[in-house]
Image 1 (cartoon, one colour):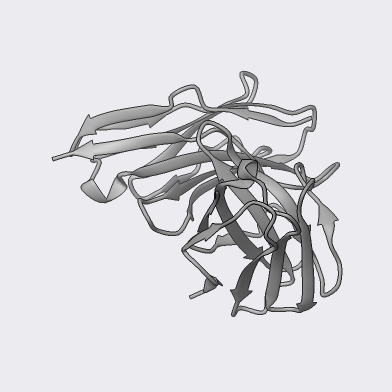
Image 2 (image 1 turned 60 degrees about the vertical axis):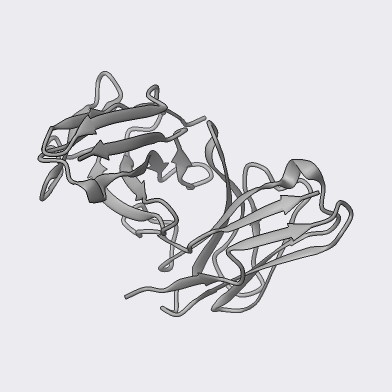
Length: 115
Length: 115
């Protein structure tokens, strides 16, 4: 089974803190994604990566950055956390190529609260 | 731009009943894929079913089936003989081979199966 894990299920941070969310997948997938999930808005893509050291902006990249130094690990960074970044963050991975028959496998999510 | 709309924020049915979740989408592309994802409470999102736009036959996976109306841009999910384990958030999503090549999600429908 594909396994996508995220470093924390719940996280509470203060405004202005630097926050790292880690995602690791164990199936040698090339593509990795970061989404945020908010009630009534569904999932919105923040960033994605289709190879090591490669990254592409999604729909809502402002206030976020990412890092992919190793194939299995994709980190989401909030440089200076703000209260409007309180959300559920989901990581996903899939095989090479942005092909629609590549199923995306999701992690359990990190619920981040910024106070 | 792609958009996906789920107009039912919440639904509730009795166990063993059949339930249909609605989804409409908008795309200018001729080749695309549509998906239904399930997110159980506190558990990871998983793919339920996918439909290729150029296939006229509706996709089926056990108790889950879709009603794909291409001209109407409608993609509903039918769950037959509903079970308590079907309780979850359900997201409709679309993917095209053009442009940004990313999944676009609807707002989600919270489905509760009552005993």
